[in-house]
Image 1 (spheres, rainbow, N blue to C red):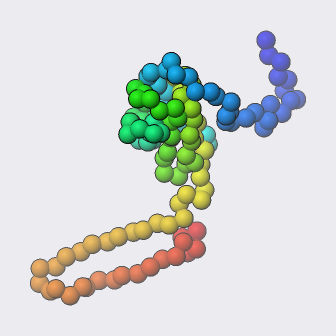
Image 2: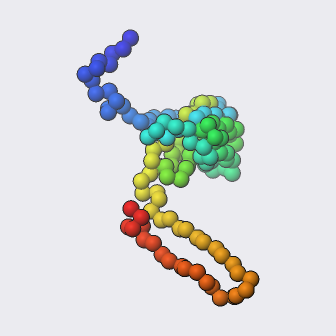
Image 3: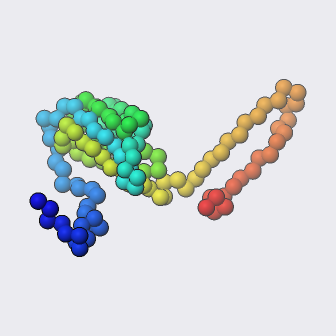
Length: 135
């Protein structure tokens, strides 16, 4: 049954996140897929940390991850350029969609290195570029 008509504005009113999850102490192993909200593509190498412990893992190339819990109640998902997510451990399968963080990449540092065996003085150019010129 489809109660959504072509005239309803379902997509714009649909929530992306739900914070109504409650901690479930029966869950011992968590797995899932992490994707980006903008493209829907899997995110590789997302850091997943069980808060309050040193237990962590990373998602693989396809965005899949698996983690055995060690007594923490929350998982923190973080990835460069995305907003961090902290969710309670509520199910054995936790698929996460991460939102872009436009303020995350304000500073870019580019470092060049060169060495010369003939001269001990620095030869080359050293310069600074402000973020305003890059945007």
